[in-house]
Image 1: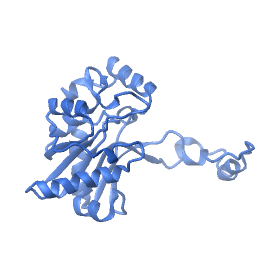
Image 2 (image 1 turned 120 degrees about the vertical axis):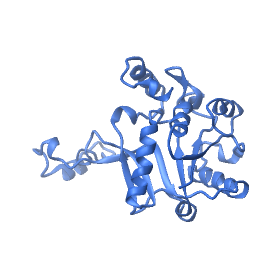
Image 3 (image 1 turned 135 degrees about the vertical axis):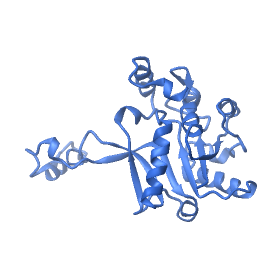
Length: 239
């Protein structure tokens, strides 16, 4: 199975300046995904889509190919991420003689994906014979405890949702999961046709909370650094 690994990293970042190359434990953020991919059994080719020469230079240091520079119109705050992915796929189809079976998208914002995670996610894809796999984590707050609040702060919708569940122990609730942004895997042709990683044959690769941290704000970055400094995340996995 030929798998193209794609890292997407644009230069602009509002929450964390130069987020994709800021360092955690001495490694640039994007390096975590680059190393995880390169250490995987399944990486046929690893490329990055970026509009930034600075990011491109850092990516090359960690063995990532930079076959093109992302067009400016795909590097704005409002740019659609799927358009970025499809642009990369189109470029590869026009310029690479290899035909790829699957695409593995790796976004730097969720850095603590391990090489074993990559291997296990792709093995899950193969075992299930599905069309995709998404990284997920278990949510802390069950959906029965989450609801909109009225403009006047009225909690009627919350009451209706929780009615009958007030005394249900949390342990008795069916676990719920949300995507963690760590890994997206899809069959190449399915992704090209339907422009989504989601389907009735997409499966969940479950990851723990501490490796599902997503860096969106400075506090997220500080917390990720703390986990590494305290040894709660083993940085040696990526060395």
